Length: 411
Length: 131
Ligand SMILES: Cc1cc2nc3c(=O)[nH]c(=O)nc-3n(C[C@H](O)[C@H](O)[C@H](O)COP(=O)(O)OP(=O)(O)OC[C@H]3O[C@@H](n4cnc5c(N)ncnc54)[C@H](O)[C@@H]3O)c2cc1C
Ligand code: SF4
Image 1: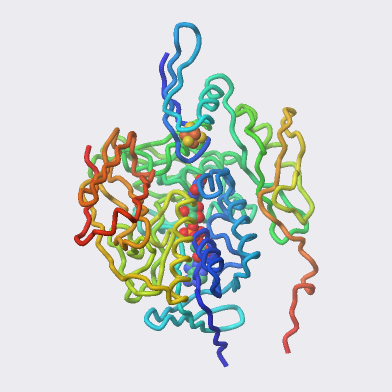
Image 2: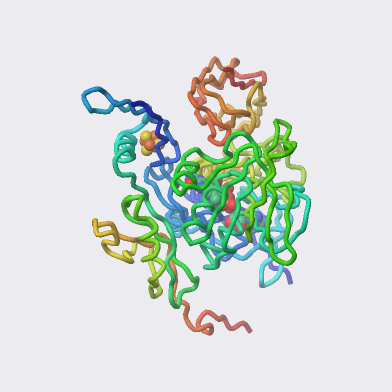
């Protein structure tokens, strides 16, 4: 017979967001179960062995595994029930009924509230549509990171990195330290995709060239990758004739960015068209009451601190749902205006402080974030799309809200 | 002299402006916290970095333990220290915070574990008999 479990708050995914959600829900006094498909909790933190985590959440700079370890320890102290190696295959969002596959077979869980914390996955090679062969030696950056940092294997000898997202930058340094020759990082945009600090400490420190406005236009190799053709591109990403150059490499690492993991889970849950993740309010609630989402499956965040903070709020609100605390269902749309790309949240619920996370559409020397309906102006300097702009609006300011709020960035 | 330095001490990544004054001192601005000032000065005279990497583990449930230096080390010595780190291995179990190499750079900096690695017991030990 299929095993049938019950719980108060069910957290799906044991990365930073899921662990923080499980912890806060458990602290609020409800029964919490956390499902994780891997053997261990931690998510991407486990393979991010570099430092740069937790400065806001723990007021201390930690490595990824250390950040995970802290949350794991706290979960152990708060009797969170963790079921690992269990993959959530289907969620009946209306009835909060979940189907799970584990090595022991299929089981189901009936929950009172659910927190989705499934993180993001890497954009695969196919998505880039590069002509040529498909030999061995082409890796997405996260896979290369796992190989080097968890499995003790090097992907090859000479590498080129395509895409300048943080994972790509960090892997350029990591592979160099491990003795591989990294010939460069190729980025089709005129600016780096990752944090400036990573350009400095991962590329400049090791004299690894960053080829901006360049891309790989052809891949060659019979069994194993042998070489790739790199070309400069114009404003429309069209290769510019006469700028092509071959790079002899056996390893191409793709850092084409992350996309929120929403497939199979998202039945009747609204997805934000730009974030490509679950559309949530500032209580972290999705379009279905009692189902919450936090972390990289809402939008790809640059800092784990933001992810953990959002997970924490999601857990608190999920606990309140279980405890039948009175919650308003008011959802006022937060609408993107000029220059606003990724934006969290999609809706404002006045009962919680409004934590805004946004990415600019382009780099700006200086600008001002404007929320006219709330009389808020936030000036900033040196804004780049890779670094989220983040600020909090006190809930006292939200009480009178009736109409949608527009957020824009003016130069 | 006048130049921008991106502080890499934390992910905020402040753009720090360093202006040298005629009297030989530096005027430093743009750092959102005091650590940025020290970083900018170090960056001018002897750049330092935290080094994170892995060390091989014998008889562990995973083959590697992630490690960090407990203080920034001189940037120019990173590869020298990497060679040293690649040549060592440690016996499981390892705990977060365990000092794996004391005074690795001769300047008092230690190499500490950042991940917990359990001992890989005999396969039968973890086996549950189901009936
Ligand atoms: C290479 C890299 C470098 C980074 N560097 C920094 C940095 O220096 N500083 C910083 O602050 N932040 C950094 N970040 C960002 C930060 O690490 C992430 O934003 C954060 O850890 C994401 O947490 P998460 O919980 O949303 O997702 P994840 O960590 O991806 O967790 C999701 C979890 O859900 C599980 N899961 C998914 N689907 C299912 C399912 N169907 N059933 C069961 N379980 C499931 C997964 O196995 C995983 O464990 C970095 C990220 C990356 C990728
Ligand atoms: S100056 Fe302070 S806040 Fe700014 S990046 Fe450096 S450490 Fe971070």
